[in-house]
Image (cartoon, rainbow, N blue to C red; front, side):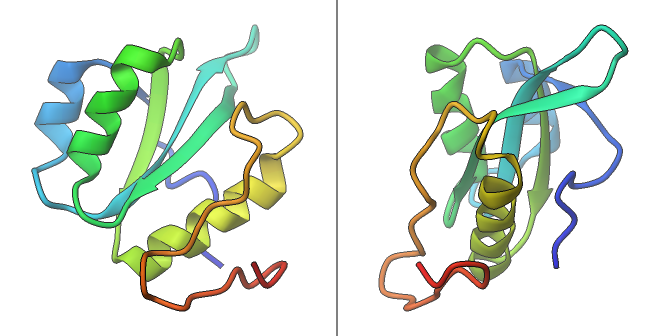
Length: 115
């Protein structure tokens, strides 16, 4: 199963940081959130892009209030599987409550629930 935390790196959710880390046209997924009092990252929003992660994350800058993010670059299938796993693992605390949709025309199903 893909790493739910996408590694140890935590980044400020800012345009300059996104532009430094993510090139246009890369697929992957991301988690937005904040740190609690002990400094632990708390996921609050999950997402992915099958075509351009940089654009997807940049669009979220306007509509979200979370100061930190984690991300991974991967193909659309792995991005969908990771997003689905994160949804099931953290759904009680996420702001997005709808199960991720598989990439258009892929026929991929969630390995945890079959959606």
